[in-house]
Length: 115
Image (cartoon, rainbow, N blue to C red; front, top):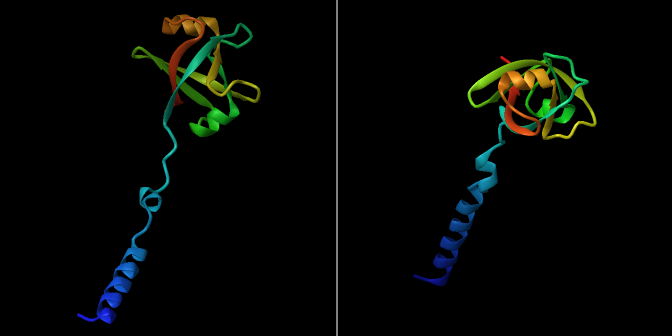
C-alpha cells in the first residue's frame, strides 16, 4: 500500500464524519412543560375561584383563561388572572380555595392549564 492510498482513505473517513450531525441537532427542540411545581400563597385580595399567576409562567404553561391546581390527588380549577410583578414560581389564591385543597400558605402545588 502506498502513502497515496492511505491518505485517500483518511480523506474518505473525514468526509463521512462531516456528514454525521452533532448530538445537539439530533436531540431536537424540547417541548414546553405541561405542568410545573410552584408555591401557592394566601391573598385575601383575590376573589374566590380566581388565582393570580405571572404572565411569564402562564405563557410557559399555555394558560390563557383557566388553570388547574393539584396537590395530594385533589384538583381545583380556577380562573386565571395574568399579572406582571408576581414571582414566576408563585401563584396567589384566595384562602377559602386553599382550605378546599387542604393546604396552608406557601405550600408546593402542581399547576397546569385547565382542560
